[in-house]
Amino acid sequence: MKNPKPGARIQVIDRAAALLEAISRYSMPVTLKALSADTNLAPSTACRILRSLIDNRFVEQDGAGKYRLSGRFIVSCHDRSSLDEIRTIAVPYMEKLRDRFGETINLTSREGDVVIYIEKVIPNRMMNVQQIIGSRAPLHVTGVGKLMLGREGQKGIAGYAQRTNLPSYTRKTFSTLETLEQECLSCIEQGFAYDNEEAETGVGCIGVLIYGQYGEVIAGLSVSAPIMRRKDEWVDDLVATGKQLSAMSGYVEKAHSGR
Image (cartoon, rainbow, N blue to C red; front, side, top):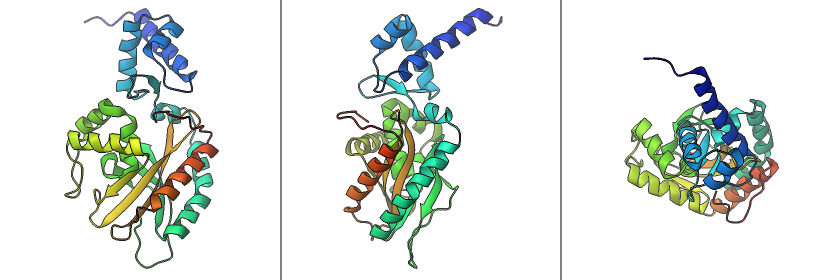
């Protein structure tokens, strides 16, 4: 079998690069029609390349079928200092939440199909929930992870389920595609997510996302507590703090942004 002609391979790369550059010029998700016009590509050609970019997690498609750069792609274009920066910014706000709730506050980032705990602040009490910095947890068993999956829509959730087979950690883990999809999309709609003993029996969590300048997800913020101590009234403070940290990271929230 002969290898493809070098020119043909370069053309595909050039077209993919043109589409990525075109998407980056928009602050909101953009239609296929607009991208086709911007790149002088036939809609069928642009659609085929965009599908490949989605499969490789460089591009995301929202519920309206519009396209945006994926958080994974944007974060990969920044150096490691961006994570250090959000940690520095977030810690004082995490400490305030810890003092208000009396529970552990976590900062997480995404790496592939897991979230990584990159910072935490813990209360001065004998019994508390602690996550080891550097430890990992599958997306589908954490509040923040379910929000990250919800951002990818039905196709992204299905891809995750196929790759991981949705292992159960407790009897409350969402271990079928149908139930996980419903949960993740619902979490995105409401702007926060619970972990109801899905990762560990007796432990509950509430999570929100922190967004960057381009609307990408740069981190997750959560409170972890014994399930009997977790309180619904924490949601408002956690959501407000997530919005503050997003604004400090350059994110401008727009009405009906569909995020």
